[in-house]
Structure formats: C-alpha cells, structure tokens
Length: 416
Ligand code: HEM
Image (cartoon, rainbow, N blue to C red; front, side, top):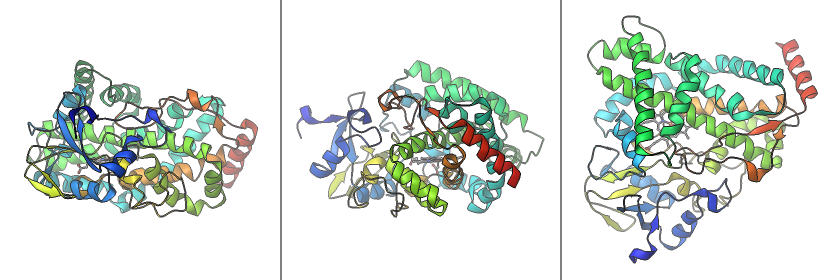
C-alpha cells in the first residue's frame, strides 16, 4: 500500500446513510480487511474490519488497553488528555480484572432486575412531565438524557440536581473536535465534582455504589482515593451518555422504519430482541476499540509487532455480512445477540444489563404512550453526532397526538 492511499482514521458516517457505519468500512472489508490507517498525529496503525478479526484482536492476550503505554494510538489531541486519566478501563489484567470484580456485583442481572420497578416509575414520571409540557419538545433533553442520567445518579449516589453540569462537561470530553485544552478543562471540572462526591461518602456507609465502594474498598486501604475518583467518573460518564444516545437514535431509527416499530407495538415480547438489533444496527460506540500490541503476534495472517497501534471498530464487525445477513436491514426479529456494540473480551461493557433494561423499558412503552409520535423537523435537519466518541443525536424535536396521549395516561393511571 502506498503512502497516498492510506486512509485517515477516524472515518465519519456523514458520507453515507446516517444510521450506517462509515462507508469505508465495507469497502475495506471487501478489499483490504486488515489495513493501515493514518491517525491525526501522522502515525499509522492497523485497522480490522471483519467480525472474526475484531473479536480475535479484542480478546488476544498480546493486546493491551493501557493508555500509559507510550505507543498507545490516540485518535485526537483531546483523546490523549481524557484517556491518560486512567480508569480501570485503561488497565490490563490482572489489575484490571481485580478492579472489575469489585464492581461486578453492582451490575449483575439479579441486581439490575431489582431496579426495574423503580426505573418503570422513573419513566412514568418522565412521560407525565412530557405530557404536561406538551408537544413539540426535544426528546433528547426530556427523555433520552433524563432517564439514564437519573438512573446513573441514583445508582452511584450523585445528586441529580447537578446533571446539567456534568452532562455539559462530559459532552466536551466526548467531542472529537474539542481541543486538548478544552478537554483538559472539562476533565478537571468534572473530576473535581466527582472528587467532592467521593469525599462526601467517607464515614457514612451509604447504600449507593460510590458509598459502598468507599466503605468497602477505599476506607479499608484496598483502593486509593484517586482511583476511586477516576473509576466513579468513568461510571458516571458511561452510565448516562451511552444509553442516552441509544434511546435517541433508536427512537429515530424506529420512526424511520415504521414497519419495525409496528411489530414491537403489536408484540411487546419482541422488544428485548429489537433492543439487540438496534444496538447492532446503530453501533453507537463509534470510537471504541483502540488498543496497542504489547508483544508480536499474528492475526488474520498478519504479523503485528509489539508497539503497533490497533484500531478495532466494532461497527465494522456489526455490519459484516458473514456475521449478520443483510446487515444494512433493520430487522427486529433477527438473531442479533452476537453483536459487538458492548465490546468483546476482557473489557466488554460492565453496565450492559442496566443499559439493556433501560432500553427495553423505553421501547416497550414509548410508542404506546405517545400515539402519533413523529419528528417535528425534516430528517436532513436532525443533528447527528458525527464527531462524538458515542454516536447519537444532539437533539430530536418530536411531536405527537396530545389528546390521545392524555387519554392513554388517564387509562394507565386508572389501572395503577
Ligand atoms: C447502550 C449503552 C452502552 C454501550 C453501547 C456501551 C459500550 C461499551 C463498550 C463498547 C465498552 C468496551 C470499551 C473497550 O473495549 O475499550 C464498554 C465498557 C464499559 N462500560 Fe459500557 N456501554 C453502555 C452502557 C454502559 C452503562 C449503563 C454503564 C454503567 C453504568 C457502562 C459501564 C462500562 C464500564 C465500566 C466499562 C469498562 C469495562 C472494562 O474495561 O472492564 N456502560 N461499554
């Protein structure tokens, strides 16, 4: 491959259908599935676009997530700042596995199921507020962000009154266009905020996640105060922004595919499957899957050398037709559970049971509770987050049949 045809990474979705991964992934998968790409600082890295290769790289013992490794391939100047703040997500085993095991009990299916009734009540309150305000309104602000932010705050023990503050700082951190200075500033502010939260838990034995972590791990000397702040920051970020983008983009995808929406409305039993398919189809984790080789190894017939940067875009795997037939088709009945949207290997998403449950609760109620739900602006004017670490929507102006929604709400109340 000559220097001239080495493509730049990250690639953007704005060149094609906004629901689809960048079109280059398909071209490369067909012509050069293991290829060289150029990063913002001129450095090159390997990029993998086949489902099987992505899984092989993400689970290979010679592959490292350590951003302190001097060869780690950062994607933007801001990335270098935010990823250097090392949560356990940027550690390798065994220290990564030890920390992950400490947090795992908070995310088991049993623990998350116990939260379901509370989350249903939260959704009811959010819907009631939306009905009170009336259409049109921005679904991102009033539902997509409001729900996961409230859930993350309650789970972690953070005061929801601060949501606008931390949401705005995290938005800078996740914007691939932000400068290193802007990211450093936003990072410092959000870390100072989380530091106060962590401090407030000392000596209190609070039942929330951060409270329990401080009591059981920090006050016992097992985990440092600094590490607790960094990990709590990761959980606050991962706990709200990801699911928020899925709710917004998932709603839009279903509005644009009304036959799929009608299927889940007619058969709510299909919703868990539809959630998996939406996760696959939309793959909001668009800048995830970046690693460095810590030893020489071979993958897909290629020799990778220690120190090589590895770009493993899970969206490319989710649209590989050797893994999912007609991947460009949104089909809520397909078997999509093998998707890579939550990652793969040792760093696979810790919060996936919670994200799944929130998404299931939203998509099994939203269209029933807001009859006639539709976007309030032309599709071309919708603000897609082409340049964010997590893909999604900046806003989603929607409207609905207000009278019918009030009637459904009254019926619900009468049944409760
Ligand atoms: C739709 C929602 C979500 C998506 C698409 C998502 C996606 C991901 C992905 C792709 C990874 C792996 C990153 C990598 O390999 O470098 C990851 C890791 C992680 N996620 Fe999620 N996530 C979601 C929701 C959540 C939620 C709700 C939480 C917690 C409240 C959470 C907490 C985490 C944590 C702690 C890790 C690091 C795990 C480790 O390194 O061992 N995520 N997530």
